[in-house]
Length: 424
Ligand code: GLA
Image 1 (cartoon, rainbow, N blue to C red):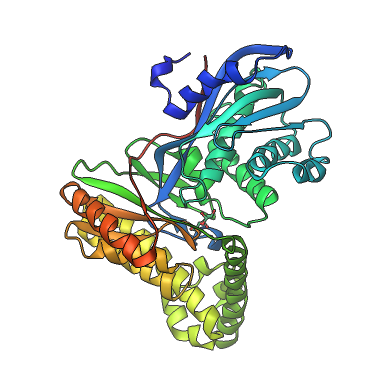
Image 2: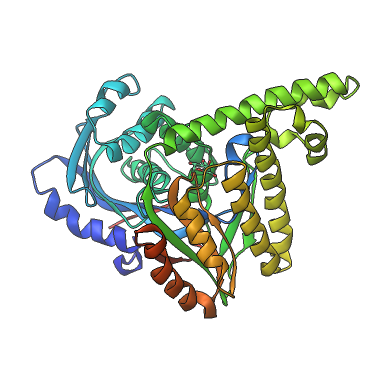
């Protein structure tokens, strides 16, 4: 049991609200508890995850949190502090009853149902529970609020399973990367977005003061120090959320898959002696040299998409080397380049994201900035010397509303730990 004052604020808030919201005479079992999981930023490696490539996320000190207690009747009852809304579903018949139950639930609760469904599909023994669900990851803002909710759900299920289901690196039912993969599948069925594993992996693997280098094919990962006292990660929120983001995301993914098939055929045709070319399965397998030689055979849109992904994968590995040398100026340069590629080649930026990056670019001491996550709104990530934070804040406050008619959110994040739970 942890001292309540050491819990993340949303977990504390949810714990405070639980006995107020759920007062009835449900047959509860076992002690009450809290579970939480972080959102993430991604230093670099955007839209590389579903291309079997590399990403470099950082779990941040913003979480989704559950506080509640196990029930003995197979019902999951949820109160969202954000939406001020109650939702419930039954464990009975899952995964078979997923579709009809999903249809009756509000969007936020579908992620919870999605995770519970995937746990049931994996034959993991689950108990019902009641919980207050809260959090401070900006919703839909590119910091992975949905992944934080999914991973926190898995933690909550472990917490309320009375020891039948455990998450951990040794002797546990599921390892953190397995939880990430399961939560990724939950995201697919809950939202219909064919997302990669970046967000869920960051939420499962985060460590204070560390960035995570993840190979999205093997799911091998390594920690890199990211704890620089005179630098900050500033997240600027465009305050724009666009409904088209989901379909555009799936379209990008499909375009990458088409580009790989075409590139493989072109390379096989031109280099019949190159047996390795037959094994090209993802853009990750296409070298820069091969792309320089054969990329022009692709239809123009596919050529641009592939050009971005191949260059971005290389940038991730460059940043890893630069991090080891504390070469933050050079890392910043790669962030600007990443943004340019996302804007011009991958075409997932928007005028508001570009505006925030342009404003940041004028400020000495902002080493680099780029859009974060899927795109079409949401946030930018800015690598900023501490002495430049105020200048950036002022420039954004003055220029962003004039240029866009909107207000931007301003947040400073720290590299934080992964999902956790505690009895109360
Ligand atoms: C979203 C998806 C991730 C990843 C990013 C882009 O956050 O959920 O899987 O593809 O977009 O890097």
